[in-house]
Image (cartoon, rainbow, N blue to C red):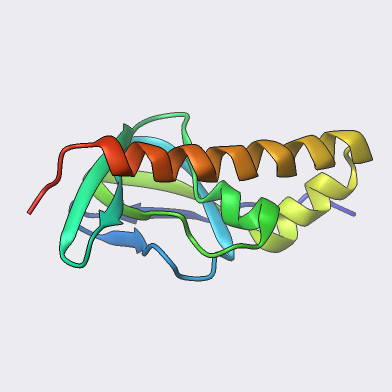
Amino acid sequence: MAQQSLERISLEPGTRIFHEGEPGDKAYLVMEGMVEISKKVGEDETIVIATLGKGEIIGEMALIDDQPRAATARVAQFAHLMVITRDDMEARLARTDSVIRQLLKVFTNRLRAETSKTAERAPVIR
């Protein structure tokens, strides 16, 4: 399979990239700017669990384990992102050793669990 050209997008501060609980069909490589990752705790409370910048990937867990988004991603500082589609990720994973694919699933499950624990302990933003 020929490698696809990945789409690039530019987003203004405050733009929501994806929302916690949504199905995930894309991941994003931050080429420039900053993205805030937040998680709901309680009904109306949210905590910021990470601020990510250049070279970081967001939204990858949903592509690996086909589970809903574990958190919300919002642009904190004008951002240029490279879009990684589910099809592109699956094509890349198909070329990877099956043991490595299984390890990615295990790591993703552990990361989801740790993200939830972090959210329970972090200060709340109202």
